[in-house]
Length: 293
Image (cartoon, rainbow, N blue to C red):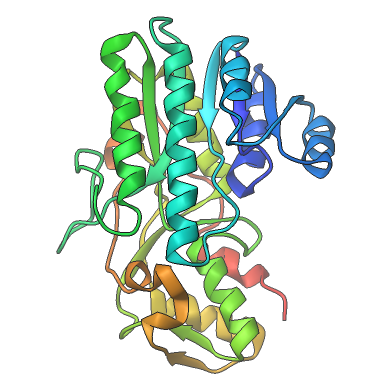
């Protein structure tokens, strides 16, 4: 396939571009800057210049491709207003891409987060939350999946809170960044809450599999580690950075504080059985050993 990819230079996106190119596909990738354009061209992709807000550019990219993988998200989400704006921008972009593909039978794979279910690991059958600080993402993903009835092979890959590579990325990466700023490897609550995780290179394989074969209207879980205790994550970060490990108020983490404090394990049993996806790269706690002081 000739695949149009947005967000192709991020932690997930760069791995997805490499995975597609390494498995016989060609890539047309959206580039927001000269730096992104160089990185994408160096990786072997064609480039379409534009921002996520340029809906006409997005439609043009989708129109000339056999399928779409939508990964781009705003770069500023450090406060509630910025997060809401980034979600609104993403929602408009997905709607434009979906409209362009309507009636074509072509695939689009989008990204969302794994849901949380009190008392157990969430599964692919559980609905996404449509309220709270990231509820808008759930609503826009649901709208995209509903295009299955309009001739779009729309699917969603639900990502865990931490997508990592070389000790960087995701919520665990934010914990490490915060530790460097404050001098404390902090975690909210009692630290027993669990976060699922996946290596970026394993996640990229699932995006490719969903693009190639997943049925319309389906959702999949890119979960390798069902749930690592946040205190265990902070303990590795503290040891690697030589910092004390302590509980801190959830407000320390801004708009993500309430999410950081939630117990949110997730299962990928159905995804592994149905699509044959098998993670092979290091677990989160193993990968965090790559953090440098």
